[in-house]
Length: 435
Image (cartoon, rainbow, N blue to C red):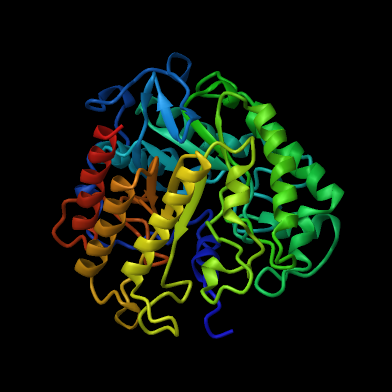
């Protein structure tokens, strides 16, 4: 199909940098390093240095998130690589997030299978590399020291860091067809051994003790939420029943493991409407957002916004401008969330500078981000998290812009994302004030 989404490009680029980053200087060397990168936690200005044991859990109910008896709303971001990188790199990006006033960071809690570019947390099914957990443990510790919260998905729909394809290949030895009809990929949701291994992984991560905090993950309020998966899809069953059945089973299981922490599916928000001509509203991916969000063990709905990747631009057959389409996508989900009485988080969104796809320059992109964050604020989103915040790598240069969505908190006038980062910082302050 000509209007079939092209979301795979962002995913496949990420896998190549799972361990070693091509540290190409972009905006100067270590002499102009991000303020606070690598500094002692206790020196962070205005941020909590308390450990997780003295903090409160974020809760959900009556269509909103709450913290310490008050509505909790947030501006946040994604930084998928925290679970693989050095303490310096983790310090750099989390210090930047704290300086921006962001309060929630989404990062991966999976790395499946040996023989890949990543360092496996789960080299083989039911086997876990304790030493490899150092980065994730440190990221949770560091986030807690800075007063930040984390959202941690437990598996990837995509093959980056192993993902569902790795589970299928472990037990079924089937070729990957994630970008075709999904028949093989989707066995992840129905095969008994795949499900057993996934449950074992969830139990291990959620119940393990962090070497830096001394707390089990399920006892640490720094982990605001677990997600069943990053962007689960099930193309082989357009009805949505397969994905819904898996999500119902696993949400009950994970919620029982971590009853004090929030739980989300981690899906993109596809509506699953048969016959709908607009791809994200259609049943193409076998995902029904309303039914997934309504599951009893699911605390909030998640929405991703990538109109360029999904063919939602003025040059497409639908003729929608990417900015306007994204605004409608956000407001539609927030309205439906109110009907479901579930909080909604716009947990991934991004645009690439591409004149052929409605975004000719950084100023136009920033205007789109302002429209989307304003829509989230005005229409009651519990939170939003742009894709993605990055910072310094070990030689002091900046993390490369692998997918065209990088945002950096850096006052260097040559930083093309400087204005966008300031926009997100101001928005985070507005969201916190509206809580």
